[in-house]
Length: 268
Image (cartoon, rainbow, N blue to C red; front, side, top):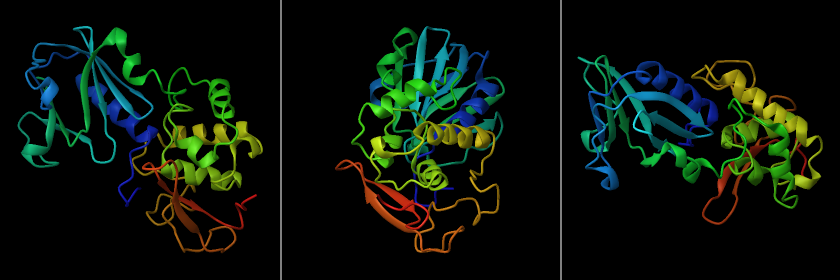
């Protein structure tokens, strides 16, 4: 969906973990390499993978050794799953950051910017700051709303991307849910009407797309029809025909691209 190289969002990471879990869970590693300086001498061979789960945009590989492999895709990371005799593809050899092999598969991580081992009992040191996970079994909308309302002066566009409020939303879902709710991205959280409904809509969209490689909020899976406003700068709004606007905004050094319709999402 993100032709401009945006970060995978919660549903994409959730789906990746489901696939990884299906080939790794309950299996002993015949090869376990972490090709990052801090853990370059770590050998996971012989360790059994208990489960692979997502937490927002983070991935947690829980191991029988009471350690967890923590991974984050950020912009460029990806896992590729290969049969034992298949040729690896997905990047150059020097881009490989992790190899998890079993009797049936090789799982190869390319360009992963975050690869680290932590004790499973200490997972909170890497994901404890996150707000409620939109696709997690413990999704708590009241806690998400409490966190959002804690800073009523913050723009809703920035607040939705702050993973400390709720975990899983990126620039695609931010743009789309704000359009569907008729809210301008620079509206202060304290001025957003029906904030609960906005958060519910966000969770519904991620949940509906969780098994699909093609993210859509319009219900149309054609590549040029999947979004209302995202990456449609200067194109006509699908509802009213007004030209879609865009800008980068956010904390210094963390500015992210935003899309909106000036008529359907008037700035207060």
